[in-house]
Length: 488
Image 1 (cartoon, rainbow, N blue to C red):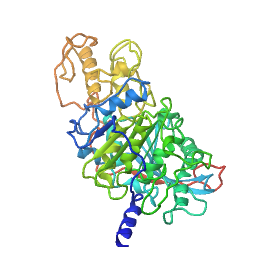
Image 2 (cartoon, one colour):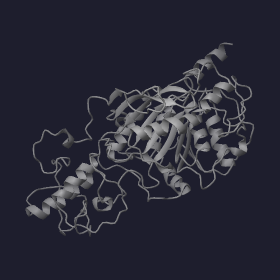
Image 3 (tube, rainbow, N blue to C red):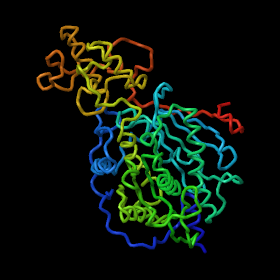
Image 4 (cartoon, one colour):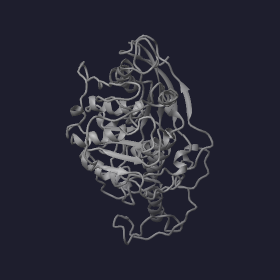
């Protein structure tokens, strides 16, 4: 009895205690153990990040193969510090629950309603809510710093209340009925929450711009929603996912019947747990700890069942980790670094042709206007630039290093070389240096204020510098009238 009560307390923080799936899976061929040595990652304060920007429109299998070779087991400490985004508290009308439901919505640093942003839905554990994933996981902090560094695409994160029941705002106890109400989140998300987010925020639509992730019960629902709606969600990540999508048994529910298929009373079988090649998410990622006393080996069994059914997926195993952020934080860190990059999304495509290296604004000249245009892009003020022309160090991402190099080119060409400025490549090695000269380095210029004037405009301060305050939070509500859909 004492053991069961202890497990119940753990479950209330995450998901079901498990035994095993009734199948025998083959060895995983697409797994990555997080116990090995991690690749070196530079800190968030450095402008030249080790980053990946694959070519647009790669296949899901090719994309995951690239990602598999670059998974990191450790998150740099400063990447987990400082949220510079903004969090709104909203209410929306859920058609499935026939009532208003809450959610939290995080918009990234530099959010501009004139631009379109991919959106990620980040799901909580059992008996949790829309605030559970806001702290303790470094989700907003990691997103803020990776976006500012250029290693992640700017994106919106929605933190929902998953439990979808007309009669209750949260789960009471653990039963098959409770599991079904969690699974009803798929209808709430696709019919109500996602349309609300698209109406009230500047969202880039399409599966290539839509992701779902979560922890424990939220990890289970991320896998389930991804399986049910592969046309809507192109990126799926599950940290320590709870059991029950397919038949299973644990100490709370001796006979999980499996989740219901979409718009059907038929339930999922092991043979249904798969994606076709055409529906495969660009990222299908699962992680779990070897010392997880809550969901045990269920995360790995989900991974192995995908393997058994011929569905490529990425598996990260964390030796000695339990059912907590020691798995979720590094898993989401890797997910954030690669999400929304498989196809061209809301950011500037880096493979656009450029007639002249440095001609960021496309006017056939390289001058001060190009420097200011690139600065505005890096600060999130514009998205209308030629990405290839701006990528002066040819690493397929745009950072402050490119801004410094462009400034060097322009100043060298207009001032007779009197100013000492930075460039990343000597002209003898860089055929795209328009003036064919080598410049010298100086670290004293702030690339965010390209001409060195004193200014009180805070937008020109170095965004790599950590603020002493966290991101802001505001509260927004909607009318109970389901047809209104407006902020009041």
